[in-house]
Structures are given as C-alpha cells and as structure tokens.
Amino acid sequence: MKLFDLFFGKAIDRHIAAYQNDLITRHCDEVQNIYRQMRGWRHDYHNHIQAMLALTDSPEEIRTYLLALNHDLTSVDTVLKTGNVMVDAILNSKLSLIKSREIAIHAKAVVPATLPVSDVDLCVIIGNLLDNALEACLCQEENARRFIRVYIGILKKQLYISVTNSAGNHVQKNGKTYLSTKNSAGHGFGLMRIDRIAEKYHGYVNRQNEPGYFATEVILPL
Image (cartoon, rainbow, N blue to C red; front, side, top):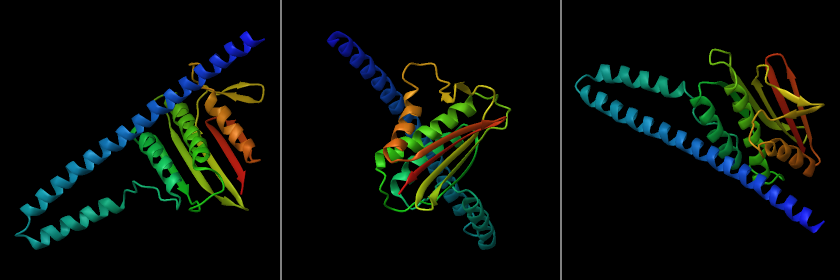
C-alpha cells in the first residue's frame, strides 16, 4: 500500500509540475507580447515627434495632424480597467495575447477593488477560462469567424464570470463532463482547478455548447 501511495504521489507531482511549467510558458508569451506592443508604441511615438517637428512652420497642418492623432488614440482602447488591480493584470495580459492572434474580442468587466475571493484563485479561474477560449479559437480554421466574449461583474451579491468563444466540432465530452482538447498529460488540471475553486467558495460552474460556440459561467457567492 505504501509503495502504491508513493507511486501515486509522484505521478501527481509530475502532473502538477507539467501544469505549472505550462502556465509559466504561457505567462512568458503574454509578457513578451506586451513588450512587443510597447516597442511598437515607442516606435510610433518617435515617428509622430519627427512628423510634428517637420510641421512646426505650419500651425494649421500640425493642428490637423494632432486632431487625427488624437482620434486614432481614442478609437483604440488598449487597456481594460475593471476597478480591481489583480483582475486588470490577468485580463489585460490575456486579452493582449488574444488580440495578437487576430481573434475578435469583446470584454466588459466591473469588479470591486476588494473581494472575499483570493487573488490567486481569481487569477486561476480567469486565466484558465481565457486560455481554454483561446485554445478553442486556434483550433478553428484561420478564415473562420473566431471570437471571444468576456463579462465579469457583480450580480445579486455574487461574482459572475462569463466567457463565450467560437467553437468548431472539436468539443469533447465524457458523459456530462467536458474534456480539454490538449493532448499532453496534466492539461486537464485547468478545468479541474476551476471546478475545485468554485466548490471551495460554494459556487457554481455551468458549461454549455451549441453549434458555433462554447460558453462557461462561474458564479461565486460573496
């Protein structure tokens, strides 16, 4: 019995280590994508300065240029501000990566600055939901209508998290249980972690799919 417990314990450790390594890799990809965006903004900022310097003797032209630049900046919302610093951090890093894959995204989130749900648990739920949504979109053909919709808010003293994504025919189920489409051992931990955290807070997870989309709702009583 002790030999079995030892073997089983080591197997679980390997699965957790593989899962954690995957999370680290994903986080590095997200940070690198943000760095690429920052380099792009720096390059554009330099070009704008050069253009305005060239127009210093033409006040009307520089005014027109500034109005066009202001319109360009206000028409692009690059940062989602929810009111909660931790939610901002995890959402914006994930959304940045999703946008870099040319996937249409609509996100709305309003969250109190403090919540009874731990920051770590909140990041695990949101991170895994968006990872799964991105994975499902990337499984579709490039010319398919790929999208992800995110809504997070407080409804009737409950934290409500909803993620909907486009989906093809790759949704896998075992009875009523949805399965990860990843092949590597340990990748099912993402779905399990969401369920266990919801159970920890006496919450509820609802997953459903219809032709063309997959949706997950997580409700945590506050």
